[in-house]
Length: 117
Image (tube, rainbow, N blue to C red; front, side):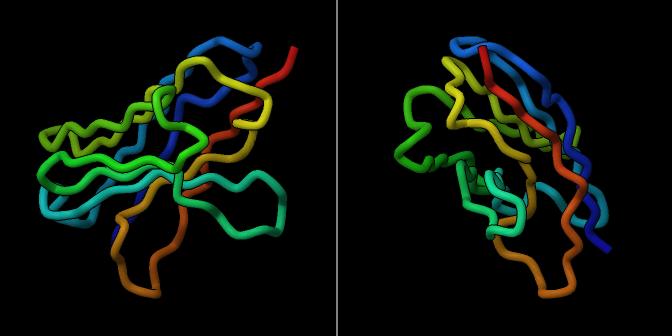
């Protein structure tokens, strides 16, 4: 069973940086495209913020382009999200998961990011 564990969130001021980490297990990690998602309003669906393919190609939603950087360490089965120039609108719970995964996947607990002055 695929499991993920996110960490690295916190309470920061606008303009600060955070680095999120996500460690996965139960899969051959190098073969999977990975994504970071966020939920900004409880009860709303999660949006894909950034993704990285098994070969390292990256993609970002427009609101974070130029500020967030996704990367991966296949040996550590870990996906990272470097978040710079944080804004209040980046506030939310951040989750990671394989971009393509079966319907029985159980989301991790996520990591809370709060950006406020």
